[in-house]
Length: 300
Image (cartoon, rainbow, N blue to C red; front, side, top):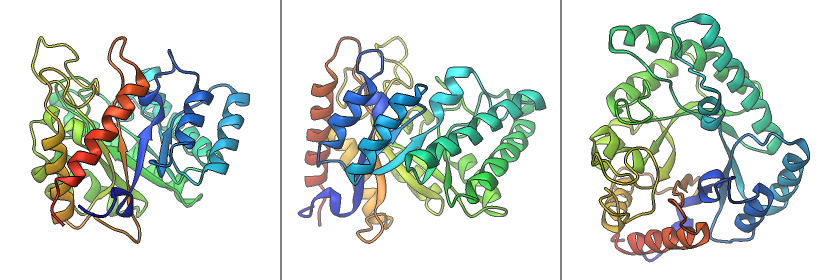
């Protein structure tokens, strides 16, 4: 493509992946990203400390970045399951997501993203009904604030082992949600396609009417290899599934399916994190190089 990617997408990054909090203070991380004109969006998550939260909000208010809020860590960190069969446990997840909507609104985000919980084959439909119940409640709360709720499609048997995907089940769920709420969408993540044994073309075409948000990244799906599972290593990581060519193919599919939207660009965030003792700044620069090269490989 001759035009820059920023013409068609709001390129973002997932703050807590780019700069894992164990190594990078959140305020320093947010400031670094706010100062980088490559990005038009930033995805944040729960910030426990109120003073830090307000400092981050002040930077975001100045930045002209589109703010997104990922509630996945809110659930994973507390072991909460929005499709738990026990109603008391399901309610805990619902309440956590409702609080996430409120925090996201305060931080200037237009919505939240989350993931389904673990499931068992003999109770899949029950879990599905529980997830609908949770998601509808959260969407009702979010709608009062004019906000979106997005479900990220994950692996179903490899690492997170979430109820949603694969893609056909995600499409079914989104269609069911659409019967009652218009502020729901799906978040499609390139790094998860290998973990659900699907291709970019298959996932995007299957989920076409429901996708509202994209992530890009990588995964190792060969058992026994370093960074196996949903670990989001850099593009081109040894024995991994995605590199420049796979990203270019993903962009081609998005172009074919009509997702290049210069008037209302979709958020497309890189979800890549340093592995081991890798340097987060180098990995961030590495990812931008891969994006630039893959974008250049797409025909106008």
